[in-house]
Amino acid sequence: MAKKRRTQKKRKTDKREIKFSKLRINLLIALGVIGLLYLQYKTVPGYNYFVKRQVIKESRLILENFSFTLDQKYQVELKRDYKSIKYVKENTPDSAVILMPPPDVFKNTIFNQRGAWGIKSKIWSTYFLYPRILIQENERDMYPELYNRITHVMVINQWGLDKLNYRVKRWMYYTVLPIRLTDSVE
Image: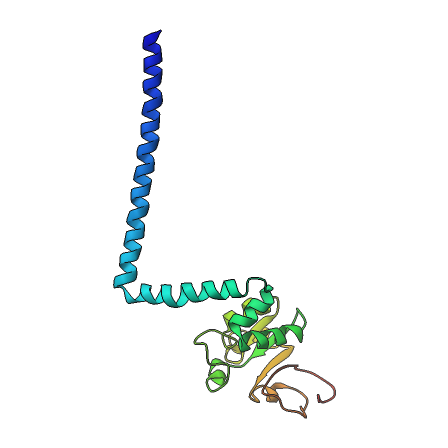
């Protein structure tokens, strides 16, 4: 009987030792990973930039605007591009097929300040405007059936006014207009 108790106690201590050794291994691995990340942060300029500029900046932005709605957060982060996308979304039906200017029209405009993304990017714009369909002028030959279904035109710096079948009396720098109207728009 005494032998049984000793073997049972020995088994319990063996299990505790195994759990403790697994914990030690996991802690050592975690410390190793943290050390490696710290080394990368100190030696590689890209990691240093990423942590200082992106992680810290984004953390502050999130904490400062914690109670904002998603729409307000987009407005803070994306500024003019989001205002423009929101304008298109509010002024077109969900079934709209929208003609976008080709990318070179955006080169000398207020929309060319954020690199490759923003309203000038068809992919980026499609994300926010779905289920509306976007087609760029330079895709006319690739998608002729879609081009024939265009219902609205994105007008930027007078580009697109020639696509309308009516005359616009008041010119705006940026707007979205239906392609067919019987009367002119004020």
